[in-house]
Image 1 (tube, helix red, strand yellow):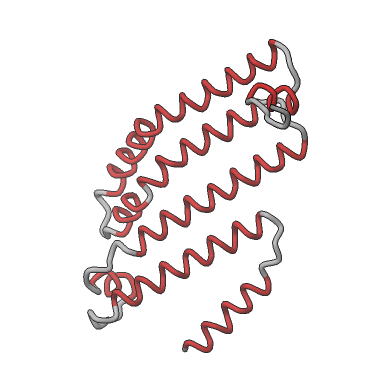
Image 2 (cartoon, rainbow, N blue to C red; image 1 turned 45 degrees about the vertical axis):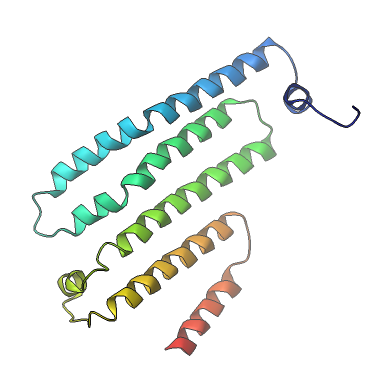
Length: 184
């Protein structure tokens, strides 16, 4: 049927043809699959080393930090594998720029995900807030504060990703500031 492209037609149209191209695609696929299969192993090794370093400290904030970033670290290796695989391919300058922006956006999202997890680690009682800041918080306010901090992290992550894609975030940040002022 006219107008339909197979994956081979798509690759031939945008990347060219030839054995060298298919070799590069094969190597890129192997790179991605290697990171995909080793993500859990690599993340667990790093987490174990960090857990050993943090278990002897006076506070448990660092333990919570390591725990909060366990899943984002695991996903980081998948993102890194995809990035390395895509950078191995013969892409033009605009495509390379898009790959870099996607990678940086994914890293921001993963860091946001880690801090989102960290914000929820002390939601059961206010003891974490008392330890960290030396203030007593009513137990009824703790879930609200946790949700507010999580929303703040999501907004900040959204702002960083939007800035990475060259959107004007100044108006958004000003509105966020005015919204916070109106809420207070």
